[in-house]
Length: 321
Image 1 (cartoon, rainbow, N blue to C red):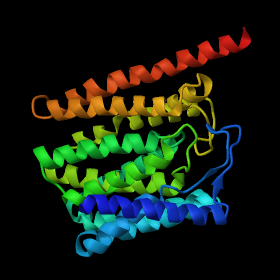
Image 2: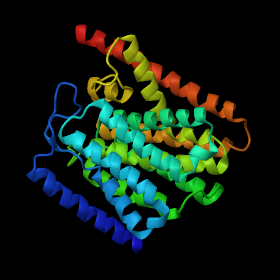
Image 3: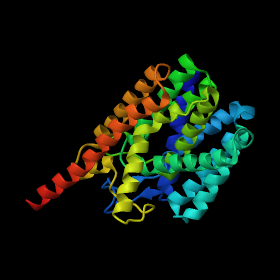
Image 4: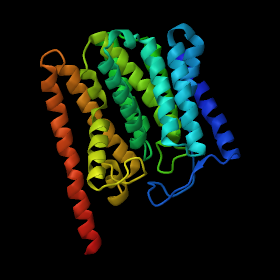
């Protein structure tokens, strides 16, 4: 009953936000790089911050630094959704929010200086990767459900590392968001506030798990996004493009834009791929060395990613013929 009520409250909060967004014209207008063709409400991902707020109200002592961090990145991201901010402002906000997380998890004491620096780079990288990948209907919600579902399973059946509701609340928020976003014509987009906030939450959970198990293996729960993002960055560097500017080079963009696959189909493909990876990690984590599991997972994913270049060449030939 508690979770049904929470879902209902989140649903109402999302509808309340829609009225505000509609009144103040917080919308996403399509351009030549967009995967959508109609004006759509932006910032529907604020639902993740609402879920964090409700959790904080119920468990303030367990989530105070986390809530301060997710509030900071959500505020800056929402501001950026309305009026574009300089990269250095966003980076400073992310750095401050991550520092709050590191302090709450005592990482400044546990890790050496190089470990802390590496942590900042990885944390900021994952947050921005999540944001880069949020470009078509359904992909953020579907992928997040798969990742959170994997973390939930580990927490329940392998190693408890966090509170049960701390995983369930963002899962319910994802379901509510998908109700409005997983459509041919989405009612809303997540916006930076959505992709950044849920990425912050996911990485916080992963940090808790890594610290509890003393294993970095669980980062593979983000392997599909990671490979796509890294591969695309390398591709854009090769093309001598500014990697911080909008583009259409991600694999999912090739599938949805050039080959016109339905957004929901592409989102499900990404979710299924990550689901297969997560199952492999869970099944093999005790039986094989970590480096072997990394190889088993990452090499095929990079192989799949290279198919993008074949599809690009094939589409270019079709356009010429």
